Length: 162
Image 1 (cartoon, rainbow, N blue to C red):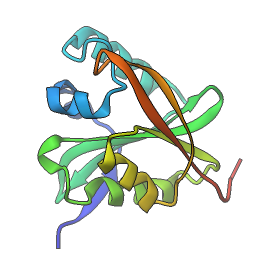
Image 2: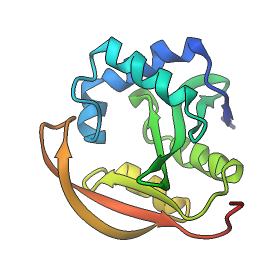
Image 3: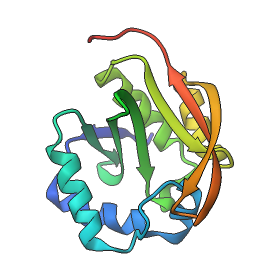
Image 4: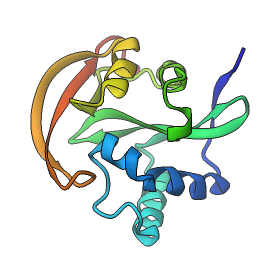
């Protein structure tokens, strides 16, 4: 059986993250991305800030020992929010669901929020499989689509170590 594990982000992961985050189909599906996913300088600055922020918990997702994505939690307007990205070549294999389950065991701060473009069925399923429930919807400008896009907002309630 294939395995999904998490480990800390290493410098060697960043070129892969950039490649995956620049994939046109992935950007379209995620919707809420940077304005120009192909701008390496912006990407590098973002990841330097992300990795140095003590409020951010981040991991590289491994499938059978190979990096295939990332998962992180960050403060969004003071509340913890989860985000994940999987290399498109690995979509539909359940990797994101398993990785998020592992991550949520390590980061048990609750409530935890999550968001997905309302038409991103795969990402919505990942959140729901991990116990997140829909609490609302809003429409915001999505740079990845260059258009207003509906976003579904989720929450995971439960135990908090804070």
